[in-house]
Image 1: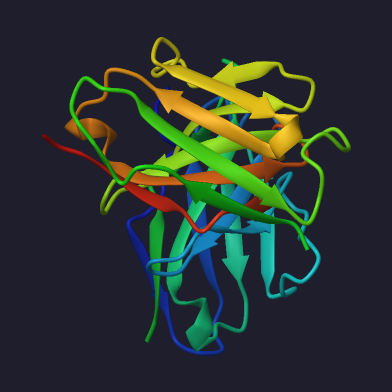
Image 2: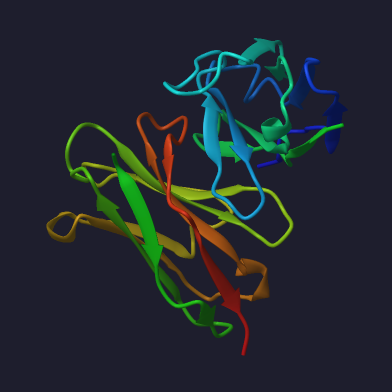
Length: 110
Length: 119
């Protein structure tokens, strides 16, 4: 299966908002509300930030929010902080019955 | 607090079988309706799902790996395992185990273990 498409990098200044896009097809993001987002700091395991498109796990800051429109999902980080600098990956369930990840987006806090 | 810990050889020879175990602590692997999965990340690259096993034993594999992958559960040891046969250098990666409350996302991850395929 093809990976979901994410921008290689996104940057913003502290306090600003940024949005990371994740583009798939009508066979994955477009068909299901099973999009999740993961944050990964260098040398660390990924951490779940958003599941089922919009849901935040307990303990995740409400500065993180998710949405979906058509074949594209988005992760918005509001009030950007230095600790948000990390790689972010989206994932979606697919009509093949599998899970597919995006290629990852490096977020830089300027 | 549920914790997962991967273990296994850090070096595997080409054409041999990679074998990893994930030990679950702080909870029972057979309680509730969880899936338990394996994900890998080649050096400098993104994440790839390898497969998952339901607490009842049903398995779900990445179609690109299904001919080489076996995931199993050992309830008596509170562990689940990954076997990947006929490995090549392309299988060199950090391997993570995870818990999936539903099939669709991973909420708890192990710290990962690096496996290098080389002679």
